[in-house]
Length: 349
Length: 278
Image 1 (cartoon, each protein chain N blue to C red):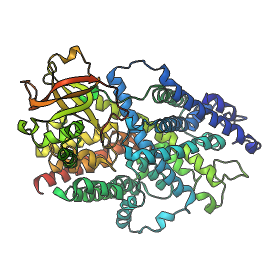
Image 2: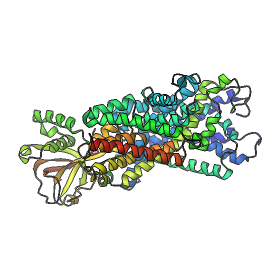
Image 3: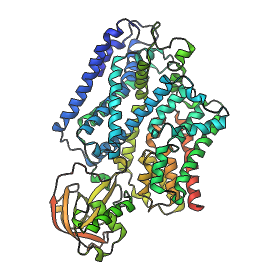
Image 4: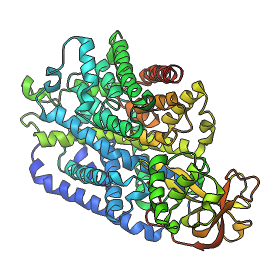
């Protein structure tokens, strides 16, 4: 950091410290069941189990998202991805909404990836388009949705088309915004402004964050990025999962299920369910399949469209990057268009 | 402990900026260790669950390999982050960033979150879901891919080996047909946890399991109704039992289930190592 002398000499100290901490964590984990038996009340216990299941399920995708984001920011040449995209804004966003085909990360992993894209030259509306489209327009989601529903009731087609349209319409709307950067949180704008990652070599100046005379290597920059991204994403993941778990434990699901056979209510109830269960878009088709007999197809289609883009956990994750105001707008827009898609299926199809 | 390890390297040698040393340290500690600390907690827990075969308490088996591999990779990054110290340098750069009070607050919040996470994730014993969640989600209202489950069940029925049918398979058979004649000569031997029937809790309980499609958060309770007046004297909700008996028209007038098992034996059993069904 400020004094560069001794960096290499201290490496072993840090490594040893890290290894000791990890070993300590493993020891605590391995020994603690022996001292357990503090019987928690069922609801508290279930809240923990549910929150933990979301975290354990999502964390690998978050790590994968951060790693891919690191590849984009540190290992690929600057502008590598933007180079292949059309320049015309509408076509450009349309192409971006298909990028998920090459980055089949779950939606939680998309947040760090989208952050990486923004640092790497995407505009704010473009990254919103990516963030909304990628959970639906990716091979894993399409395959699992097809496995679950085939082509019955137009559910698969509705999901794909609605995902594409919603992401592009919202991207277009925000491209009309006079100052799209104001949609970002201050902290994230600041980190975009620090050209620490991709610009370094090309612009030929020293990164701001580093002492003169020493430029960190790629591995070091990757680890640095991991540290900074997890500092932002992991708290959001933990808090979002806790909120999702609390909602699960305290809001009876039967209330929602009672609404299943009405064309309008089935759509709204399924969107509410999607919002609170926060299942990954890769597998939500299997989850919602079990409601197929209770709910009308439009409700299912809305669930699959809305839930992939927005839910409690995603909002917590997206809040790391976007202002609350922007998220309220995006959520409202996605909800309205998803509901429209569902109603269309219920009344027309 | 993580604080002790870092403070030595964190404090700038001399104050070059208007922010006080303490504020910078607060901001630095939060930014530098919050994500790494939480990642460490979750990767250690994941790897431990994987090694001890308990990941199934939280996620579907199809994710076991991916989750474990990513956790090991995450662990490598966590350890590597202890080697490099560059992130420290970035913090004092952010001029016009949060005020001193805000920084201290952020550090306090981060430390609290990390402490809570460490205790709940690393110190509490892993647990399966309880009936508290089951009562929030209507029994047999979903969770089964009924066609696939029914064809599995049909295959087993073909063998005539009814005692091998699980809760899941009986539930999917019952979803196909509730004709008492079909079940008259068949003995069920099923294992699950005790879940009172909301409509008639004195006389009927379910031998229940959770069906998981992705992770425990989407668990749906399924169950076979058992008619046993006064069962509460012998069993508690959430006890794991093995029930043997035959199907009859449900004598309970309030219960919504047409058929119920009239038990010949109810034996307490240990919770299976894989409590969920998929």
